[in-house]
Image (cartoon, rainbow, N blue to C red; front, side, top):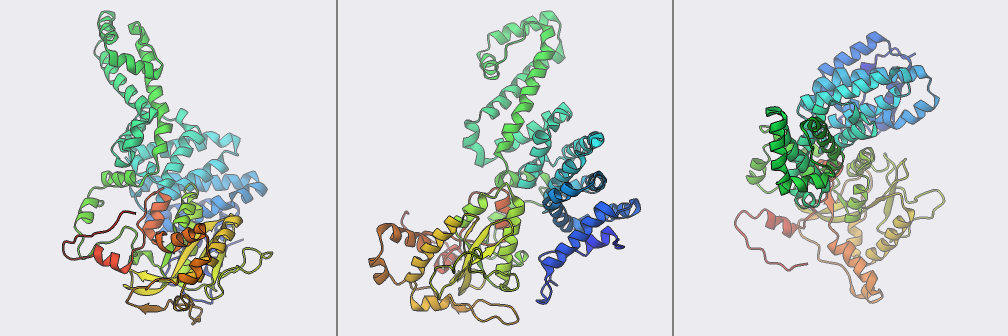
Length: 563
Protein backbone atom coordinates (compact mmCIF):
# COMPACT_ATOMS: atom_id res chain seq x y z
CA UNK A 1 0.00 0.00 0.00
CA UNK A 2 1.40 3.40 -1.04
CA UNK A 3 1.34 5.78 1.93
CA UNK A 4 1.99 8.84 -0.25
CA UNK A 5 -1.12 10.95 -0.92
CA UNK A 6 -2.37 11.34 -4.49
CA UNK A 7 -1.76 15.09 -4.50
CA UNK A 8 1.87 14.57 -3.48
CA UNK A 9 2.33 11.99 -6.22
CA UNK A 10 0.85 14.37 -8.80
CA UNK A 11 3.02 17.19 -7.50
CA UNK A 12 6.14 15.05 -7.97
CA UNK A 13 5.52 14.56 -11.72
CA UNK A 14 8.24 16.32 -13.70
CA UNK A 15 7.24 18.10 -16.88
CA UNK A 16 9.27 17.38 -20.07
CA UNK A 17 10.67 20.93 -20.17
CA UNK A 18 11.54 21.29 -16.48
CA UNK A 19 14.95 22.92 -16.05
CA UNK A 20 16.15 20.25 -13.61
CA UNK A 21 15.71 17.39 -16.10
CA UNK A 22 19.28 17.66 -17.36
CA UNK A 23 21.07 15.04 -15.25
CA UNK A 24 22.32 12.49 -17.84
CA UNK A 25 22.37 9.77 -15.17
CA UNK A 26 18.61 9.96 -14.61
CA UNK A 27 16.02 8.56 -17.01
CA UNK A 28 13.31 11.14 -16.35
CA UNK A 29 10.85 9.58 -18.78
CA UNK A 30 10.97 6.26 -16.91
CA UNK A 31 10.78 8.07 -13.58
CA UNK A 32 7.71 10.00 -14.75
CA UNK A 33 6.01 6.82 -16.00
CA UNK A 34 6.68 5.12 -12.65
CA UNK A 35 5.06 8.07 -10.86
CA UNK A 36 2.05 7.96 -13.19
CA UNK A 37 1.66 4.25 -12.49
CA UNK A 38 1.73 4.95 -8.74
CA UNK A 39 -0.91 7.66 -9.22
CA UNK A 40 -3.09 5.20 -11.11
CA UNK A 41 -2.71 2.46 -8.50
CA UNK A 42 -3.50 4.95 -5.76
CA UNK A 43 -6.59 6.05 -7.65
CA UNK A 44 -8.14 2.64 -8.28
CA UNK A 45 -7.17 0.76 -5.14
CA UNK A 46 -6.08 2.95 -2.24
CA UNK A 47 -7.83 6.33 -2.36
CA UNK A 48 -10.01 7.12 0.64
CA UNK A 49 -12.51 9.99 0.81
CA UNK A 50 -10.29 12.30 2.86
CA UNK A 51 -7.38 11.85 0.44
CA UNK A 52 -9.73 12.52 -2.49
CA UNK A 53 -11.14 15.65 -0.83
CA UNK A 54 -7.65 16.98 -0.09
CA UNK A 55 -6.57 16.30 -3.67
CA UNK A 56 -9.60 17.98 -5.27
CA UNK A 57 -9.31 21.09 -3.06
CA UNK A 58 -5.60 21.52 -3.84
CA UNK A 59 -6.15 20.96 -7.56
CA UNK A 60 -8.89 23.57 -7.67
CA UNK A 61 -6.99 26.21 -5.67
CA UNK A 62 -3.68 25.73 -7.51
CA UNK A 63 -5.20 24.84 -10.87
CA UNK A 64 -2.66 26.76 -12.98
CA UNK A 65 0.23 24.87 -11.37
CA UNK A 66 -1.38 21.44 -11.68
CA UNK A 67 -2.91 21.87 -15.16
CA UNK A 68 0.06 20.48 -17.16
CA UNK A 69 0.43 17.59 -14.69
CA UNK A 70 -3.26 16.74 -14.87
CA UNK A 71 -2.95 16.92 -18.65
CA UNK A 72 -0.16 14.31 -18.54
CA UNK A 73 -1.96 12.13 -15.99
CA UNK A 74 -5.32 12.03 -17.79
CA UNK A 75 -3.59 11.30 -21.11
CA UNK A 76 -1.82 8.42 -19.38
CA UNK A 77 -5.16 7.18 -18.00
CA UNK A 78 -6.77 7.33 -21.46
CA UNK A 79 -3.91 5.33 -22.97
CA UNK A 80 -3.97 2.78 -20.17
CA UNK A 81 -7.73 2.48 -19.75
CA UNK A 82 -8.19 -0.46 -22.09
CA UNK A 83 -5.66 -2.40 -20.00
CA UNK A 84 -7.33 -1.30 -16.76
CA UNK A 85 -10.85 -2.15 -17.92
CA UNK A 86 -9.85 -5.59 -19.19
CA UNK A 87 -8.84 -6.86 -15.76
CA UNK A 88 -10.61 -4.36 -13.54
CA UNK A 89 -13.31 -5.19 -11.05
CA UNK A 90 -16.44 -3.06 -11.03
CA UNK A 91 -15.17 -1.38 -7.87
CA UNK A 92 -12.14 0.01 -9.72
CA UNK A 93 -14.32 1.51 -12.42
CA UNK A 94 -16.42 3.11 -9.70
CA UNK A 95 -13.33 4.64 -8.05
CA UNK A 96 -12.02 5.96 -11.36
CA UNK A 97 -15.42 7.40 -12.31
CA UNK A 98 -15.74 8.99 -8.87
CA UNK A 99 -12.38 10.77 -9.16
CA UNK A 100 -13.01 11.95 -12.73
CA UNK A 101 -16.50 13.15 -11.85
CA UNK A 102 -15.09 15.23 -8.98
CA UNK A 103 -12.31 16.48 -11.24
CA UNK A 104 -14.85 17.70 -13.81
CA UNK A 105 -17.34 19.14 -11.31
CA UNK A 106 -15.08 20.66 -8.65
CA UNK A 107 -11.91 21.50 -10.57
CA UNK A 108 -12.47 21.98 -14.30
CA UNK A 109 -15.96 23.47 -14.04
CA UNK A 110 -14.90 26.19 -11.58
CA UNK A 111 -11.91 27.07 -13.78
CA UNK A 112 -13.68 27.25 -17.14
CA UNK A 113 -12.90 30.97 -17.43
CA UNK A 114 -9.30 29.84 -18.02
CA UNK A 115 -10.38 27.97 -21.14
CA UNK A 116 -7.73 29.81 -23.16
CA UNK A 117 -4.99 28.24 -20.99
CA UNK A 118 -2.94 25.80 -23.04
CA UNK A 119 -3.90 22.29 -21.94
CA UNK A 120 -7.33 22.92 -20.37
CA UNK A 121 -9.31 21.76 -23.39
CA UNK A 122 -7.21 18.58 -23.57
CA UNK A 123 -7.81 17.98 -19.86
CA UNK A 124 -11.56 18.45 -20.38
CA UNK A 125 -11.54 16.11 -23.38
CA UNK A 126 -9.61 13.39 -21.52
CA UNK A 127 -11.78 13.71 -18.40
CA UNK A 128 -15.09 13.46 -20.27
CA UNK A 129 -13.76 10.47 -22.22
CA UNK A 130 -12.62 8.70 -19.04
CA UNK A 131 -15.88 9.39 -17.20
CA UNK A 132 -17.89 7.97 -20.08
CA UNK A 133 -15.75 4.83 -20.36
CA UNK A 134 -15.58 4.10 -16.63
CA UNK A 135 -18.99 5.36 -15.55
CA UNK A 136 -21.06 3.84 -18.32
CA UNK A 137 -19.98 0.35 -17.20
CA UNK A 138 -21.97 0.86 -14.01
CA UNK A 139 -25.51 0.40 -15.30
CA UNK A 140 -27.01 1.83 -12.12
CA UNK A 141 -24.82 4.93 -12.37
CA UNK A 142 -25.55 5.97 -15.96
CA UNK A 143 -27.81 8.80 -14.86
CA UNK A 144 -24.96 10.21 -12.76
CA UNK A 145 -22.61 10.18 -15.76
CA UNK A 146 -25.22 11.80 -18.01
CA UNK A 147 -25.93 14.48 -15.42
CA UNK A 148 -22.25 15.31 -14.92
CA UNK A 149 -21.63 15.63 -18.66
CA UNK A 150 -24.88 17.56 -19.15
CA UNK A 151 -23.90 19.95 -16.35
CA UNK A 152 -20.43 20.62 -17.78
CA UNK A 153 -22.01 21.47 -21.14
CA UNK A 154 -24.39 23.89 -19.40
CA UNK A 155 -21.41 25.40 -17.58
CA UNK A 156 -19.58 25.86 -20.90
CA UNK A 157 -22.59 27.68 -22.30
CA UNK A 158 -22.96 29.77 -19.15
CA UNK A 159 -19.29 30.77 -19.20
CA UNK A 160 -19.57 31.86 -22.88
CA UNK A 161 -16.56 29.77 -23.92
CA UNK A 162 -18.21 27.48 -26.47
CA UNK A 163 -16.55 29.22 -29.43
CA UNK A 164 -13.10 29.02 -27.78
CA UNK A 165 -13.46 25.28 -27.26
CA UNK A 166 -15.19 24.24 -30.48
CA UNK A 167 -12.63 26.00 -32.71
CA UNK A 168 -9.60 24.08 -31.40
CA UNK A 169 -8.97 20.38 -31.76
CA UNK A 170 -9.37 19.02 -28.23
CA UNK A 171 -12.44 21.12 -27.48
CA UNK A 172 -13.93 20.20 -30.85
CA UNK A 173 -13.49 16.46 -30.28
CA UNK A 174 -14.80 16.78 -26.71
CA UNK A 175 -17.98 18.59 -27.79
CA UNK A 176 -18.46 16.22 -30.71
CA UNK A 177 -18.24 13.25 -28.35
CA UNK A 178 -20.69 14.81 -25.89
CA UNK A 179 -23.31 15.90 -28.40
CA UNK A 180 -23.25 13.17 -31.02
CA UNK A 181 -21.22 10.11 -29.99
CA UNK A 182 -22.78 10.03 -26.51
CA UNK A 183 -26.08 11.28 -28.01
CA UNK A 184 -26.38 13.90 -25.27
CA UNK A 185 -27.92 16.25 -27.82
CA UNK A 186 -31.26 14.59 -27.03
CA UNK A 187 -30.94 15.32 -23.30
CA UNK A 188 -29.63 18.90 -23.25
CA UNK A 189 -32.11 21.75 -22.91
CA UNK A 190 -33.37 22.93 -26.31
CA UNK A 191 -32.75 26.60 -25.46
CA UNK A 192 -29.06 25.79 -24.84
CA UNK A 193 -28.80 23.90 -28.12
CA UNK A 194 -30.39 26.72 -30.11
CA UNK A 195 -27.95 29.16 -28.51
CA UNK A 196 -25.06 26.80 -29.34
CA UNK A 197 -26.10 26.62 -33.01
CA UNK A 198 -26.23 30.43 -33.23
CA UNK A 199 -22.75 30.75 -31.67
CA UNK A 200 -21.20 28.14 -33.97
CA UNK A 201 -22.87 29.55 -37.10
CA UNK A 202 -21.80 33.13 -36.28
CA UNK A 203 -18.21 32.01 -35.71
CA UNK A 204 -18.09 30.21 -39.05
CA UNK A 205 -19.88 33.02 -40.92
CA UNK A 206 -17.40 35.66 -39.71
CA UNK A 207 -14.31 33.62 -40.58
CA UNK A 208 -12.60 34.54 -43.89
CA UNK A 209 -11.33 30.96 -44.23
CA UNK A 210 -14.90 29.67 -44.73
CA UNK A 211 -16.29 32.20 -47.21
CA UNK A 212 -16.18 29.83 -50.17
CA UNK A 213 -17.26 26.81 -48.16
CA UNK A 214 -20.34 28.52 -46.73
CA UNK A 215 -21.65 29.49 -50.16
CA UNK A 216 -21.81 25.78 -51.05
CA UNK A 217 -22.90 24.52 -47.64
CA UNK A 218 -26.41 23.09 -47.44
CA UNK A 219 -26.29 22.96 -43.63
CA UNK A 220 -25.56 26.69 -43.42
CA UNK A 221 -28.45 27.41 -45.82
CA UNK A 222 -30.72 25.28 -43.64
CA UNK A 223 -29.55 27.16 -40.54
CA UNK A 224 -30.17 30.59 -42.12
CA UNK A 225 -33.57 29.48 -43.43
CA UNK A 226 -34.71 28.12 -40.06
CA UNK A 227 -33.49 31.25 -38.30
CA UNK A 228 -35.36 33.54 -40.70
CA UNK A 229 -38.61 31.57 -40.52
CA UNK A 230 -38.46 31.29 -36.74
CA UNK A 231 -37.95 35.02 -36.45
CA UNK A 232 -40.96 35.77 -38.67
CA UNK A 233 -43.39 33.17 -37.37
CA UNK A 234 -42.44 33.51 -33.69
CA UNK A 235 -43.23 37.21 -33.84
CA UNK A 236 -46.65 36.36 -35.29
CA UNK A 237 -47.27 33.72 -32.64
CA UNK A 238 -46.26 36.01 -29.77
CA UNK A 239 -48.22 39.06 -30.94
CA UNK A 240 -51.55 37.42 -31.54
CA UNK A 241 -52.49 33.88 -32.46
CA UNK A 242 -56.19 34.45 -32.97
CA UNK A 243 -57.49 32.79 -36.10
CA UNK A 244 -58.35 35.98 -37.98
CA UNK A 245 -54.86 37.41 -37.52
CA UNK A 246 -53.27 34.09 -38.41
CA UNK A 247 -55.28 33.96 -41.64
CA UNK A 248 -53.90 37.37 -42.59
CA UNK A 249 -50.33 36.19 -41.89
CA UNK A 250 -50.84 32.98 -43.87
CA UNK A 251 -52.27 34.90 -46.83
CA UNK A 252 -49.27 37.23 -46.81
CA UNK A 253 -46.86 34.31 -46.58
CA UNK A 254 -48.52 32.48 -49.47
CA UNK A 255 -47.72 35.46 -51.68
CA UNK A 256 -44.10 35.57 -50.48
CA UNK A 257 -41.89 33.64 -52.89
CA UNK A 258 -38.99 33.74 -50.42
CA UNK A 259 -41.04 31.90 -47.79
CA UNK A 260 -41.97 29.31 -50.41
CA UNK A 261 -38.29 28.79 -51.27
CA UNK A 262 -37.40 28.49 -47.59
CA UNK A 263 -40.08 25.89 -46.94
CA UNK A 264 -39.11 23.94 -50.07
CA UNK A 265 -35.48 23.79 -48.89
CA UNK A 266 -36.60 22.37 -45.55
CA UNK A 267 -39.14 20.00 -47.08
CA UNK A 268 -41.89 21.54 -44.97
CA UNK A 269 -45.34 22.92 -45.67
CA UNK A 270 -46.86 26.13 -44.36
CA UNK A 271 -49.19 25.56 -41.39
CA UNK A 272 -52.82 25.83 -42.49
CA UNK A 273 -54.34 27.02 -39.21
CA UNK A 274 -53.25 28.74 -36.02
CA UNK A 275 -53.33 25.51 -34.01
CA UNK A 276 -50.68 24.03 -36.36
CA UNK A 277 -48.20 26.81 -35.58
CA UNK A 278 -46.67 25.42 -32.34
CA UNK A 279 -45.88 22.11 -34.04
CA UNK A 280 -44.49 24.00 -37.06
CA UNK A 281 -42.20 26.09 -34.83
CA UNK A 282 -40.94 23.01 -32.96
CA UNK A 283 -40.12 21.35 -36.29
CA UNK A 284 -38.19 24.46 -37.38
CA UNK A 285 -36.23 24.51 -34.12
CA UNK A 286 -35.39 20.82 -34.51
CA UNK A 287 -34.10 21.32 -38.06
CA UNK A 288 -32.00 24.22 -36.82
CA UNK A 289 -30.53 22.05 -34.06
CA UNK A 290 -29.92 19.22 -36.55
CA UNK A 291 -27.73 21.58 -38.61
CA UNK A 292 -25.27 21.83 -35.70
CA UNK A 293 -23.55 18.53 -36.49
CA UNK A 294 -22.69 19.59 -40.05
CA UNK A 295 -21.76 23.15 -39.02
CA UNK A 296 -19.22 21.73 -36.56
CA UNK A 297 -17.42 20.05 -39.47
CA UNK A 298 -15.90 23.46 -40.28
CA UNK A 299 -13.76 23.03 -37.15
CA UNK A 300 -11.11 22.97 -35.83
CA UNK A 301 -9.95 26.20 -37.44
CA UNK A 302 -7.05 28.48 -36.51
CA UNK A 303 -8.74 31.61 -37.86
CA UNK A 304 -11.97 30.85 -35.98
CA UNK A 305 -10.01 30.15 -32.81
CA UNK A 306 -8.24 33.47 -33.13
CA UNK A 307 -11.60 35.26 -33.47
CA UNK A 308 -12.94 33.34 -30.48
CA UNK A 309 -9.99 34.36 -28.30
CA UNK A 310 -10.43 38.03 -29.26
CA UNK A 311 -14.12 37.85 -28.38
CA UNK A 312 -13.34 35.98 -25.15
CA UNK A 313 -10.74 38.48 -23.92
CA UNK A 314 -10.19 41.49 -26.22
CA UNK A 315 -7.70 43.07 -23.80
CA UNK A 316 -5.52 39.96 -23.71
CA UNK A 317 -5.79 38.98 -27.38
CA UNK A 318 -5.38 42.19 -29.34
CA UNK A 319 -3.76 40.47 -32.32
CA UNK A 320 -4.10 43.39 -34.73
CA UNK A 321 -1.83 45.65 -32.71
CA UNK A 322 0.80 42.97 -32.24
CA UNK A 323 0.87 42.10 -35.92
CA UNK A 324 0.81 45.60 -37.38
CA UNK A 325 3.54 47.21 -35.31
CA UNK A 326 6.57 44.98 -34.76
CA UNK A 327 9.02 46.60 -32.35
CA UNK A 328 12.39 45.65 -33.80
CA UNK A 329 12.11 43.27 -36.72
CA UNK A 330 9.56 41.10 -38.43
CA UNK A 331 8.95 37.78 -36.64
CA UNK A 332 7.86 34.79 -38.67
CA UNK A 333 4.77 32.99 -37.29
CA UNK A 334 6.73 29.81 -36.52
CA UNK A 335 10.03 31.43 -35.68
CA UNK A 336 11.79 30.19 -32.56
CA UNK A 337 11.29 32.01 -29.28
CA UNK A 338 12.48 31.54 -25.71
CA UNK A 339 9.24 29.84 -24.65
CA UNK A 340 9.93 26.93 -27.02
CA UNK A 341 12.74 25.69 -24.73
CA UNK A 342 14.42 24.05 -27.71
CA UNK A 343 17.87 22.57 -27.45
CA UNK A 344 20.92 23.73 -29.42
CA UNK A 345 19.82 21.99 -32.63
CA UNK A 346 17.41 23.57 -35.10
CA UNK A 347 14.90 20.95 -36.28
CA UNK A 348 13.38 21.45 -39.73
CA UNK A 349 10.39 19.44 -40.94
CA UNK A 350 10.04 18.64 -44.64
CA UNK A 351 6.82 19.16 -46.60
CA UNK A 352 6.15 15.41 -46.47
CA UNK A 353 6.64 15.39 -42.70
CA UNK A 354 4.09 18.18 -42.28
CA UNK A 355 1.62 16.15 -44.37
CA UNK A 356 2.36 13.11 -42.20
CA UNK A 357 1.54 15.10 -39.06
CA UNK A 358 -1.61 16.58 -40.61
CA UNK A 359 -2.87 13.03 -41.13
CA UNK A 360 -2.55 12.63 -37.34
CA UNK A 361 -4.77 15.69 -36.69
CA UNK A 362 -7.50 13.61 -35.05
CA UNK A 363 -4.90 12.01 -32.76
CA UNK A 364 -3.42 14.96 -30.85
CA UNK A 365 -1.89 12.63 -28.26
CA UNK A 366 0.23 11.07 -31.03
CA UNK A 367 1.23 14.52 -32.34
CA UNK A 368 2.34 15.43 -28.83
CA UNK A 369 4.43 12.22 -28.59
CA UNK A 370 6.10 12.99 -31.93
CA UNK A 371 6.78 16.59 -30.86
CA UNK A 372 8.32 15.32 -27.63
CA UNK A 373 10.73 13.14 -29.62
CA UNK A 374 11.58 16.05 -31.93
CA UNK A 375 12.32 18.11 -28.82
CA UNK A 376 14.69 15.38 -27.65
CA UNK A 377 16.43 15.45 -31.03
CA UNK A 378 16.83 19.21 -30.61
CA UNK A 379 18.45 18.63 -27.20
CA UNK A 380 21.47 16.88 -28.72
CA UNK A 381 21.19 14.04 -26.17
CA UNK A 382 20.64 11.50 -28.87
CA UNK A 383 22.12 8.40 -27.25
CA UNK A 384 20.39 9.05 -23.92
CA UNK A 385 17.00 8.98 -25.66
CA UNK A 386 17.98 6.23 -28.17
CA UNK A 387 17.42 8.43 -31.20
CA UNK A 388 20.18 7.14 -33.48
CA UNK A 389 18.84 3.76 -34.55
CA UNK A 390 19.91 2.70 -38.03
CA UNK A 391 17.46 -0.18 -38.38
CA UNK A 392 13.68 -0.06 -38.57
CA UNK A 393 13.57 -3.51 -36.91
CA UNK A 394 15.90 -6.27 -35.81
CA UNK A 395 15.27 -8.08 -39.12
CA UNK A 396 16.38 -5.22 -41.37
CA UNK A 397 19.83 -4.43 -42.65
CA UNK A 398 21.67 -1.15 -42.17
CA UNK A 399 20.03 1.76 -43.93
CA UNK A 400 21.34 2.09 -47.47
CA UNK A 401 22.43 5.70 -47.58
CA UNK A 402 25.71 7.47 -48.13
CA UNK A 403 28.07 6.35 -45.37
CA UNK A 404 29.29 9.89 -44.62
CA UNK A 405 25.76 11.23 -44.13
CA UNK A 406 23.95 8.72 -41.91
CA UNK A 407 20.17 8.74 -41.66
CA UNK A 408 18.57 7.67 -38.40
CA UNK A 409 15.22 6.24 -37.38
CA UNK A 410 13.40 6.91 -34.11
CA UNK A 411 11.07 4.03 -33.30
CA UNK A 412 7.91 4.95 -31.36
CA UNK A 413 5.81 2.50 -29.35
CA UNK A 414 2.80 2.96 -31.65
CA UNK A 415 4.71 1.81 -34.74
CA UNK A 416 5.52 5.26 -36.10
CA UNK A 417 9.04 5.96 -37.36
CA UNK A 418 10.77 9.35 -37.47
CA UNK A 419 13.35 9.55 -40.26
CA UNK A 420 16.03 12.21 -39.68
CA UNK A 421 19.58 13.25 -40.53
CA UNK A 422 22.18 15.86 -39.65
CA UNK A 423 22.45 18.49 -42.38
CA UNK A 424 23.40 22.15 -42.60
CA UNK A 425 21.74 25.44 -43.45
CA UNK A 426 21.07 29.02 -42.42
CA UNK A 427 19.50 29.45 -38.99
CA UNK A 428 17.55 32.45 -37.75
CA UNK A 429 18.56 31.81 -34.16
CA UNK A 430 22.27 32.45 -34.68
CA UNK A 431 22.03 34.24 -38.05
CA UNK A 432 24.68 31.91 -39.43
CA UNK A 433 25.34 28.79 -41.47
CA UNK A 434 25.27 25.89 -39.03
CA UNK A 435 24.57 22.22 -38.60
CA UNK A 436 20.90 21.38 -38.11
CA UNK A 437 18.52 18.43 -38.22
CA UNK A 438 16.17 17.65 -41.09
CA UNK A 439 13.12 15.45 -40.51
CA UNK A 440 12.20 13.58 -43.68
CA UNK A 441 9.17 11.53 -42.56
CA UNK A 442 6.93 10.50 -39.66
CA UNK A 443 5.21 7.33 -40.81
CA UNK A 444 4.46 3.69 -40.02
CA UNK A 445 4.66 2.80 -43.72
CA UNK A 446 7.88 0.79 -44.21
CA UNK A 447 7.56 0.98 -48.00
CA UNK A 448 7.42 4.78 -47.84
CA UNK A 449 10.40 4.93 -45.48
CA UNK A 450 12.48 2.71 -47.77
CA UNK A 451 11.55 4.83 -50.79
CA UNK A 452 12.71 8.01 -49.03
CA UNK A 453 15.95 6.27 -48.05
CA UNK A 454 16.57 5.29 -51.68
CA UNK A 455 15.97 8.90 -52.72
CA UNK A 456 18.31 10.21 -50.03
CA UNK A 457 21.06 7.90 -51.22
CA UNK A 458 20.89 9.69 -54.59
CA UNK A 459 20.50 13.15 -53.07
CA UNK A 460 23.58 12.73 -50.87
CA UNK A 461 25.72 11.95 -53.91
CA UNK A 462 25.10 15.51 -55.13
CA UNK A 463 26.74 16.94 -52.00
CA UNK A 464 30.29 18.19 -52.46
CA UNK A 465 33.04 16.72 -50.23
CA UNK A 466 32.95 19.89 -48.17
CA UNK A 467 29.17 19.68 -47.72
CA UNK A 468 29.41 16.03 -46.68
CA UNK A 469 31.95 17.04 -44.07
CA UNK A 470 29.52 19.66 -42.76
CA UNK A 471 26.99 16.86 -42.12
CA UNK A 472 29.33 14.92 -39.82
CA UNK A 473 28.35 15.33 -36.18
CA UNK A 474 30.92 16.11 -33.52
CA UNK A 475 31.83 13.64 -30.80
CA UNK A 476 29.61 13.70 -27.74
CA UNK A 477 30.80 15.60 -24.68
CA UNK A 478 29.05 14.47 -21.47
CA UNK A 479 26.42 12.70 -23.59
CA UNK A 480 25.71 15.94 -25.48
CA UNK A 481 26.33 16.56 -29.19
CA UNK A 482 26.39 20.20 -30.25
CA UNK A 483 25.95 21.59 -33.79
CA UNK A 484 28.98 23.10 -35.47
CA UNK A 485 28.81 26.74 -36.57
CA UNK A 486 30.01 26.84 -40.18
CA UNK A 487 30.30 30.61 -40.67
CA UNK A 488 28.15 33.59 -41.52
CA UNK A 489 28.10 33.08 -45.28
CA UNK A 490 25.80 31.06 -47.54
CA UNK A 491 26.22 27.73 -49.25
CA UNK A 492 27.66 27.92 -52.75
CA UNK A 493 25.63 25.06 -54.26
CA UNK A 494 25.86 21.37 -55.06
CA UNK A 495 28.01 19.24 -57.33
CA UNK A 496 25.96 18.42 -60.43
CA UNK A 497 27.88 17.39 -63.50
CA UNK A 498 28.95 13.81 -62.77
CA UNK A 499 25.89 12.66 -60.83
CA UNK A 500 23.29 14.45 -62.96
CA UNK A 501 24.54 12.94 -66.22
CA UNK A 502 23.75 9.40 -65.00
CA UNK A 503 20.23 10.08 -63.71
CA UNK A 504 16.83 9.79 -65.37
CA UNK A 505 14.55 12.80 -65.71
CA UNK A 506 12.31 11.58 -62.86
CA UNK A 507 15.32 11.14 -60.58
CA UNK A 508 16.57 14.63 -61.42
CA UNK A 509 13.15 16.09 -60.61
CA UNK A 510 13.18 14.23 -57.28
CA UNK A 511 16.64 15.58 -56.42
CA UNK A 512 15.54 19.09 -57.39
CA UNK A 513 12.47 18.80 -55.16
CA UNK A 514 14.33 17.51 -52.12
CA UNK A 515 17.24 19.94 -52.35
CA UNK A 516 15.75 23.12 -53.80
CA UNK A 517 11.96 23.39 -53.81
CA UNK A 518 11.29 21.48 -50.58
CA UNK A 519 9.99 23.96 -48.00
CA UNK A 520 11.16 23.08 -44.49
CA UNK A 521 9.22 24.31 -41.45
CA UNK A 522 11.16 24.96 -38.21
CA UNK A 523 10.03 23.16 -35.06
CA UNK A 524 8.41 25.51 -32.54
CA UNK A 525 5.59 25.65 -30.00
CA UNK A 526 3.52 27.69 -32.44
CA UNK A 527 3.92 24.98 -35.09
CA UNK A 528 2.69 22.37 -32.59
CA UNK A 529 -0.34 24.49 -31.67
CA UNK A 530 -1.10 25.07 -35.34
CA UNK A 531 -0.94 21.35 -36.13
CA UNK A 532 -3.31 20.33 -33.32
CA UNK A 533 -5.69 23.09 -34.42
CA UNK A 534 -5.78 21.67 -37.93
CA UNK A 535 -3.73 24.39 -39.61
CA UNK A 536 -3.12 24.13 -43.35
CA UNK A 537 -0.56 26.85 -44.10
CA UNK A 538 2.88 27.09 -42.51
CA UNK A 539 5.77 29.53 -42.72
CA UNK A 540 8.85 27.77 -44.07
CA UNK A 541 12.51 28.29 -43.21
CA UNK A 542 14.10 31.10 -45.22
CA UNK A 543 17.62 31.62 -46.53
CA UNK A 544 20.00 34.29 -45.25
CA UNK A 545 19.23 36.63 -48.17
CA UNK A 546 15.48 36.11 -47.77
CA UNK A 547 15.70 36.90 -44.07
CA UNK A 548 17.65 40.08 -44.79
CA UNK A 549 14.92 41.15 -47.22
CA UNK A 550 12.21 40.43 -44.64
CA UNK A 551 14.01 42.58 -42.07
CA UNK A 552 15.05 45.35 -44.46
CA UNK A 553 14.81 48.56 -42.34
CA UNK A 554 13.68 50.67 -45.31
CA UNK A 555 11.21 50.32 -48.15
CA UNK A 556 12.32 47.76 -50.72
CA UNK A 557 11.37 46.55 -54.18
CA UNK A 558 11.76 42.80 -54.53
CA UNK A 559 11.99 41.54 -58.10
CA UNK A 560 11.57 37.83 -58.71
CA UNK A 561 10.02 35.33 -61.05
CA UNK A 562 6.88 33.28 -60.67
CA UNK A 563 7.31 29.64 -59.82
